[in-house]
Image (tube, rainbow, N blue to C red; front, side, top):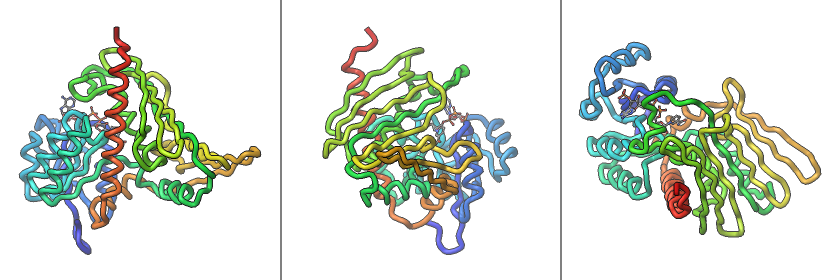
Length: 326
Ligand SMILES: NC(=O)c1ccc[n+]([C@@H]2O[C@H](COP(=O)([O-])OP(=O)(O)OC[C@H]3O[C@@H](n4cnc5c(N)ncnc54)[C@H](OP(=O)(O)O)[C@@H]3O)[C@@H](O)[C@H]2O)c1
């Protein structure tokens, strides 16, 4: 996208929590800068632009898409708005970096992909952990058969926080609930390890305040690989997985993002109680942004995102069948 020495100029849609982190990451990535930020209100956009040293503040998302000083759009809105604004950005000829979950459904995600393809722009979902150097090591270890034959994958991602009023995570109309928000991570992990889609999914949920606050899913993949996945808003922060093989297990307790101020880490546990710890440095978001603004093919990430969305659809279908709300 950005040629030798050129700068990719980002426009940002939304001024929420994740925007703060990603704006800092974009601004500190070589070859990228944030030139404009849009909010629903001009006051909020101006306040944000002043706080974070962004040149232009814009009222309304549409106004950002027509700007000449924006090459790529970072969509940091509630999930229900991702498809609409990612497609609008593509139609305006802007490359699209879209927050996770990519959209609400596989159908919507395919529409986003088609729009980006049709308008010749790049697309990437902002699933940061896939871009950490450590994740490349996971892949190498798996390909080398370091753990023997993989049998089972377990993963859990959660946090406990009383929500403030107006929180999109509690609004079904905005794509609220833990499945799209946190289930995206556990499904992406299982898909990354298993390398494809499950053949069977069984899931249940705990519903409170009108949205799923906890989801548990079991999955069956090819080659007898199984998975148990959990996500929720009612247990304290967890971001771990275990991949159990016939020779050893890979364990990680910070896969979505390293614990604050600590290096990323993981362990290999062998069958005799031996444990080896591996620390990793590096910023996954900056690596992700660097990849997005490069010319590197992104097809593998596209397939990973579509499959993740597919798994979320399957969990949704299974919990609907369970009639848990009667
Ligand atoms: N990659 C990650 O690590 C990570 C972490 C957290 C969240 N996320 C994802 O990022 C997205 C945003 O999450 P967030 O936690 O940043 O959300 P948030 O703090 O609630 O911010 C969402 C922003 O969207 C805009 N918005 C437009 N219509 C809205 C509506 N009806 N209700 C609420 N906000 C509305 C608002 O910006 P304006 O008022 O300025 O228009 C708001 O600040 C979600 O898809 C979430 O899953 C990703």
